[in-house]
Length: 240
Length: 221
Image 1 (tube, rainbow over the protein chains, first blue to last red):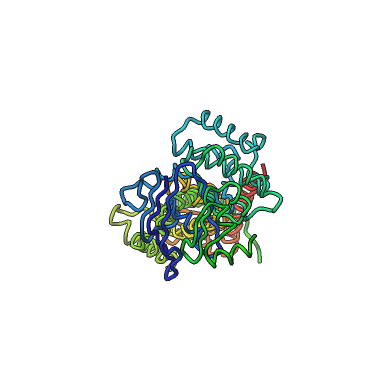
Image 2 (cartoon, rainbow over the protein chains, first blue to last red):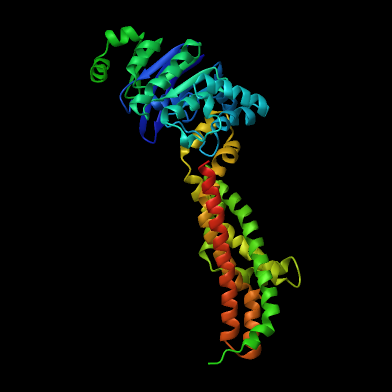
């Protein structure tokens, strides 16, 4: 589903991603962990070209993003993204937030898009908030709407960039619950997170990144219980 | 000092007609300025520096030179190339439009850039093109933020339209100067004209406050 080969990314002279290669199979849930500044957010943002790629290749469902002939907008319709700070559209109702892209990008009829949006809202437990504005929602509710908004495009892959890092602790659970359900439904997911419990429980594979490299990757149990590298051990000893 | 109200009443029909023209040219200047300003603002935000360059030059020239000089060049230099004799109202509208476009462009740019960049990223990540994201997500939010500075610009424009009197465009100030010249009086015509400008700008202030309030209550639905 996703094939990353020798991905490199710099901001000015600061090389953030040095040589990243990773393949993600359909329906796989990959969790990316690592200290801040390790490049994990930049890595996930490269997967839908929110960051320009300086070297290497990123293939999504067979399409090479670095190929100039690839229509990036088309690829992005297949790649849902959930941000740390939700980024809901404050001037639109919850329902409009979800239907905006299906109507304007997919060319879906308004009635059909709204019907689908209501189904998705019910799925994330917010059916009664359809006509509310983002402002009136709690952080956890906003993030669940953001997930519904991404799902409305019927993506093949979902990217989560620290989806619970900006939430009050008591709201983390409701968002993770939605993500777990999504994983059970067979969605291909890449999740950057500090929630080690989620990584252990839901992840098929955990990638530990540090300093622009993938240091180690393994099944959650193996990686958490028997890390091979010193840096992984040092990191895990601090967060677990 | 005696105040001759008869001068005011004699000239009132002209003052009122001048006021109508002042409102007309200001409105035309604002509308054209808004359209040009938006185009210039978007051009100035291009990621290509060669596209940015002409828009930067435009803004620097029109903000960096006096409107009076611009009006004289336009009226006596540029417009005569296309129409003869050149019509001062046409020149005035062109001058006001081009000048306000430069200021309005900077207002729009500041408004657009004040929107959190996560909004653009969210829109693009949903597959929207840059243009769609601008139109559906960024601009509707930016509009609300540019209303107060735009109100200022409209008031400035309305007052600066008085420079049209130098081109003999028959707006409000032109009739003030005409009355002053005919009666060799200062207070009556200029105070009257000043009061009419004040009524116009205060009405505009009130109108902009109303629009601002309406938009901000929209948020609290």
